[in-house]
Length: 61
Image (tube, rainbow, N blue to C red; front, side, top):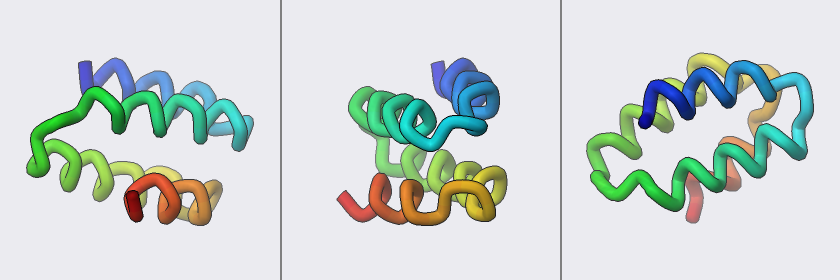
């Protein structure tokens, strides 16, 4: 499921609102803290130049 989420985020990264919606949706079902950390690192490496504020907001919760 995490791989599917990564594909979705990559496809919707052109739209900030859609990206934010999908990112927050993904964080609702990821329960393992290790998976969340890996997902956060991936998001930062892939999208930190496009959506830094959204990523910081999502993982600050």
